[in-house]
Length: 232
Image (cartoon, rainbow, N blue to C red; front, side, top):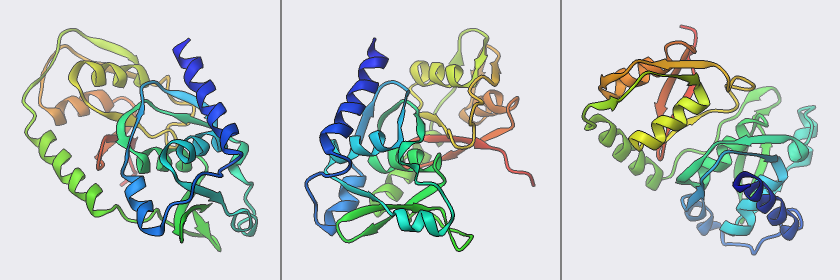
């Protein structure tokens, strides 16, 4: 029921926004809005436009899709695509936005008072997200330090199950903030992870979690991101 309530609330928000029509903010405030914290205590699936509408309504961001930019790249406007949103409890708005856009092969740019969604290519050449803000970079360093200082993490009993469920278990028991990148694990949430009971240093625990699914981790400003291991 809780899951349904969240999905419904996101849909109502998008409808109330009449497709991205929030109160405008000044250009100088956009970066501050992106580093507000967001609370999403359960994973959901929702249309792309509704996920963005949620940010518009609750965080005062004006969000637009550059339809002409998608057309120039022979790409479909992603507004109606379905997106999978992981549990994101206490992450930055920017993190939520990036995970939604990664699934659409899109990025954003800041144009005056607006966040503008564009394809992640221009004339076939790859484009990247804007660099992290000073606040995010500081938070990233703090998270790196916190991870480095973590003592032994104790797993009471053997754990085996889908990677999504296993990572949620670790988040709940060990107060980690692991997020699996849905763009890199499309349809792969059922891949099995196995962790033997015991005491682990953080890096050893992550190696145990990810060894069977060809994945690695990256420390982001507000979470630990699980991504596919790149071929060397």
